Image (tube, rainbow, N blue to C red; front, side, top):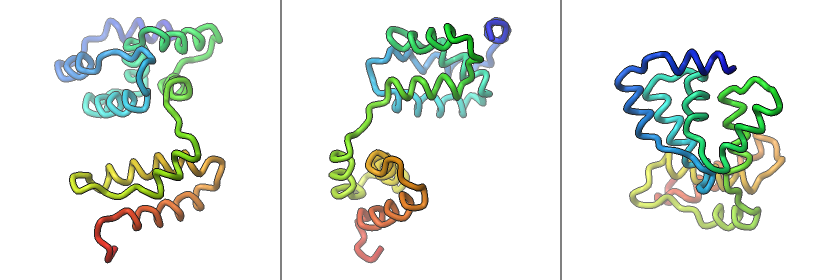
Length: 157
């Protein structure tokens, strides 16, 4: 893995990749990783990064308590992939909702006048997955669909 990072450090970036990388900032563990992850993955898609690139750039962004996650993986001697690093950061730094909070959000979630359908769907799915823990996927989808229809502004939906 060290050899991979050394190779990547010496590889020139395109101007677009460099611009994307510089706009991302750092992740120090004081904020919700879910937000940083979404921005990072969007930037990675725009820059056409491979999973190796994503792993490298994400590792370079870590500061503060977030570096401990990376350090712990290094100490374990495992092959650090983007998926593994992302999962460990997600587990440590993504804020979770309680079941009661999620149920309350599910009941009251309505699509806002300026909110796109995809934003509304994402908000509803996050609350639903926090509420329906350890439940079969088809059950979650069935119930989320009901809450989705109830949350649409058009009563004909």
